[in-house]
Image 1: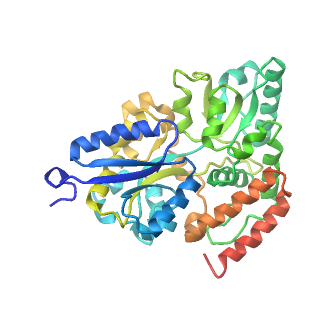
Image 2: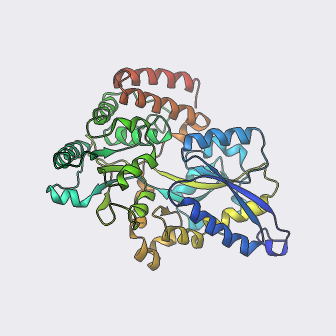
Image 3: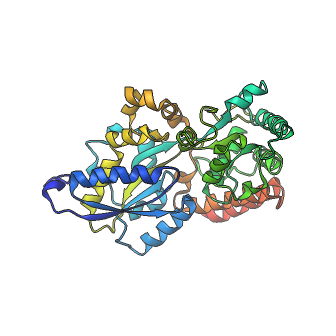
Length: 408
């Protein structure tokens, strides 16, 4: 019997666990209903908080316990090396579809020849900016972090003087979690400060360019960025942005479609550009995105694989991208006329998917989560005024050497 011949097989009840932001839940439920109608299976959604760090911690607890209650896991792009042993190898089930996806993303989900997860959607962050405010004050879209800092302060001050006391210059994710690793990595790489740990395993984070990049970010807190930034995650920044209370915001593509909804105060008043460059003249955007994996403890692996292939198929991705602004991982959708007409924003990132900055998960392997936690702690300490960037990076370097030991 074919794996996908479920209409002739018994129906199974399976579960999928995911973190959700924006309109993710509604879209997922609509697609699951279609899957259930076609296959006879039923699918339960287990929802977790949107923080990927919190999700990862819960995943590890469930998987370490051999929990059979979760069949399909939505996984962050950096988790494959850490969780590979807990998921089934999708290689034999995907030979007929593997060429539909970007090779770079397939490579990121392949560990020692094992395809850990199938790509669901990709995300590349950008600099959201208020087109109406830049036009009002005769400002260009900033190309560098220094230009962004100056423009944000000038427009924020002018708007406040004009009576808008709630206006801020720049919103970003400053809470101590994986999101700060993404933001911080962009500051470092764009400023010639390295990739925390390089592809050859060398620890590079303790250098003057990295320290200067973190000090610049520290200068934003309480000046162009709210003091509350130290607790902000993606949805916190989007909430302020969508109320019309910021000039610039760093965020992922999902915020674009939500900002264009009818109830948005900024509908038709914003756009997105590449993140600003630093001293080395390059823009750096962290590769994000989510994939779907099947637990090796699942009691219904055939149905679980069927769900993964359904949700990641070009047809299902097309439905999702038509109502969301995340970038599809199926190559053909970038040439689809309907997608081009309805969601041109989601297709801007085709080239960026091959050039985006990867977090050092493949090189640090099972130790990546600890590497990231140590990095975001050093960055958070700097942002909050607990030590200088130089001191925090020196301490981080020592801890990374201890963590590495004889090798990653």
